[in-house]
Image (cartoon, rainbow, N blue to C red; front, side, top):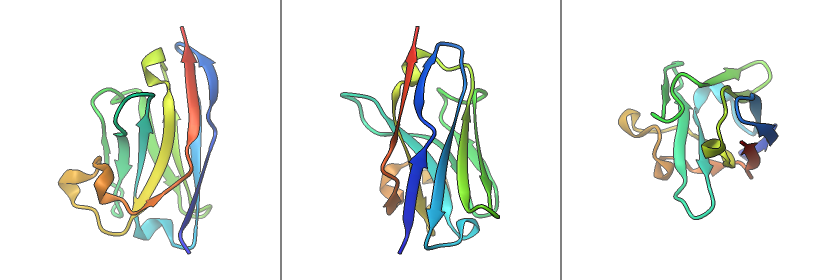
Length: 125
C-alpha cells in the first residue's frame, strides 16, 4: 500500500529556510516520479517542484533558484529545501507520487495518484 507522510513544516520569518520531508512506504522511491505541490487559502493547488525516475528536476517559476527537490533512496524519503522564503510561500505543502507522469506535465496535479497529508508552512514578514 502506497503511503506518503509529509513533515517539516513550521513558522519562519521572511528570508528564512525550511526543509520538508516526505517519507514514502509501500513502493520504491526511485521507481516513481515525485513532486511537491502547495495550496494557499483560496487558491488552486500549484506544482512547486518535481523529480523524475531518471533524476531530472523541474521547478515552478516562482520558486526556481530558491527551492531544491532531492531524494534519499536509502531512506526512501523525498525532500524540499526551501531558502529565501517570503510570505507568498505560505501554504499547505503536499508531496505526490506516481509511476507514470507525462514529462511535460510534471507540475500538474492531475498526473499524480498518491498524496501526502500535507504540512503547513507559514512565513511572516
